[in-house]
Image 1 (cartoon, rainbow, N blue to C red):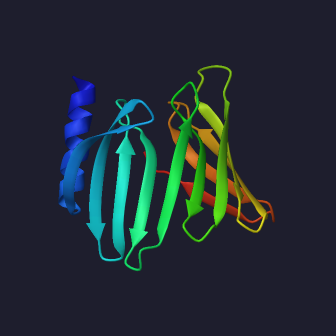
Image 2 (cartoon, rainbow, N blue to C red):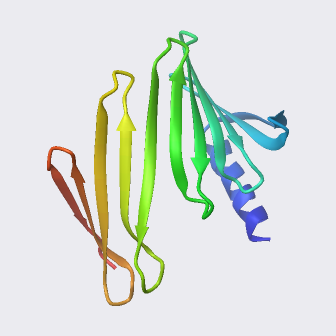
Amino acid sequence: MKGKMFYFGLMALFLQIGCTQTSNALKDEKQFFQVIVNGEFGQKVYYLDTDNKIRRSDFIDTAGKVTARTYNYDNNGRLQSINKTSSLGEKSEIYFSYEYSRDDGQISKKIVCHTTSRGNEQRIETVFERGENNNVKKIISTDENSNTWIKKLKH
């Protein structure tokens, strides 16, 4: 029941932002739900699996340039990587890794590595500090140049 409610909520969101078409699409021998969203700068096509996870998205800009993203998930359903390619031959990859606390299995650290089409790697490490009630109270992100961003959350 929760999955159906999420699905209907997702569809309502897409309808609010200009979704013009939805249909079932068969891709790679799996059933995907296709959502097309028209916007000012082009069209975005999302391919969602039966778990409502985006598996692929295509952006077609007004000039006809296509940028495709493929989303890969780990066994826990967390985003593991995104592979991006464009019709101009540009490629980039984003990798996600997670560390968990020993006590409760909550995410304590997330590392995002992005390799650009020029081969440059960018890395951002994010640490989640938790309060007594186990809610995240502070998010600290640091890039490869030691630039740091801190966000304090109010509960």
